[in-house]
Length: 321
Image (cartoon, rainbow, N blue to C red):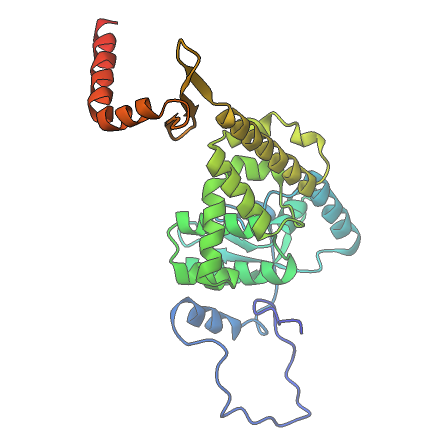
């Protein structure tokens, strides 16, 4: 069943039936930001769409989708030229700039209208920051079906801009565990890399989480790697994601091969004394109880003294150097 978009004008009332509504419970509580949105919704059917010059509308604020291409804007602009603007955008007045407005939703439509110099058909609503975010999130969830990574970036931007967690959850229609997953991905993978990849609608949460985990474990410079891959030559964002993921997986494989190449310490008489392995997190010395069991036992008994002696020798070399 398709959910009704709360931020579009409702259909006219059905006068053919007398429906009793006294016992119906409200869909949303009459508290917080949603209360203000409900108050605004009561006026939607009576308020007319206004024509507003596009140079009076500002675009700043959290964005719920990655940047759209020039081709997308050009295609929409051509459609508007031929058929007119079918769906209005929503704006809100700027209290500190009388006569100017701030976009709530419809950024791509606004960009297309700007490109052809046509005024925007807009719903004008006086909304708080929280109410505007709820309107933006619900409208775009219904119309655009944002990808996982677009939602994750939007959530991170809302958090960075000081919005409370309940507002973010309502705007994206998600629960706390999903918000936590989105935040982890958006904080681990640099936004520059995400922008290079794109919206990747065919890539779900698990693959983005897997990429974030791989990047974290490898401690790789994702920005440099993605910049060197020539992603702008790969046509689809899903394929760009795959290219980055493969590159990180290759780094991890190389790192594992490097870590598995141990240095063997052999005595003058040909006996293996120890195996030394170097990894990003530790230097491991493994002594053989097969080739030199007595030496291994002696090292165990004297490890503290010998390690301190070696440490003091290292310090002396550092000072003399």
